[in-house]
Image 1 (cartoon, each protein chain N blue to C red):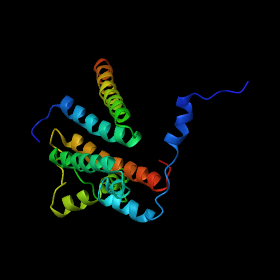
Image 2 (image 1 turned 180 degrees about the horizontal axis):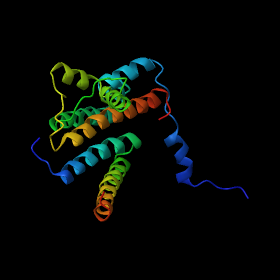
Image 3 (image 1 turned 180 degrees about the vertical axis):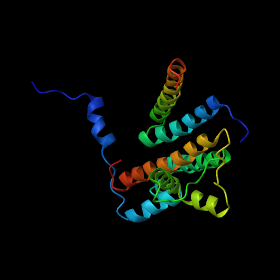
Image 4 (image 1 turned 90 degrees about the horizontal axis):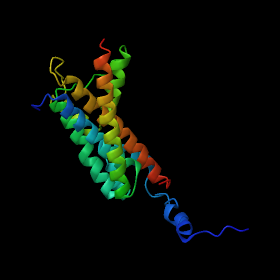
Amino acid sequence: MNTTSHLLLMALFAGCVAVVGGVLLKDAPRQQARTAAEIFGSLVGAALVLGWVLYFFPL
Amino acid sequence: MAERPSSKRAARPAATAPAAPHAARPLALVYLLGWLIPGGGHLWLGRTVKGIVFLVMLPAMFVIGLALDGRLFPLTPGDPLVALASIANLGSGLPYFIAQALGFGAGRALAATYEYGNAFLITAGLLNALVIIDAHDIALGRK
């Protein structure tokens, strides 16, 4: 795979986990889509927040 | 005063009542099928849409992990972290054995995407374990 964009790879990872998680946790398609969106948003959002926190507190 | 159930509430118990257990499906086979073929347990239990989603997504994550130069870790009891990663890799089932047989999964630690590849490979195996547990619940009629 040619891309080395961390943001893109993180979003791809979050998307895969979100789809599997949504389908696993819920039965109705609408609920599955909502849960998947929540998981995706949580993963990407948490990563971005942690990224900015670490920016201000470098090792 | 007796509480009068609304029509919505009255309809709920029937809609969420647990399904009958799949008595004709031996649990061991559900586990084995679900492990070897991600989503295979669901497909066998008649949950076709869920099974297809797992059948597509989990091997796709595995292949992406390999494409990102991730490593399939060897089972080394002396190194607990590597051993745990190896067990997680094993969770992917047939894709793991096929990749091993074809010589994939050596990993390239110098690649910028190495850790991402490992994350994809390990997570694919762990998610498949959750999928097997879900198939177990369906087989027992809990879902």
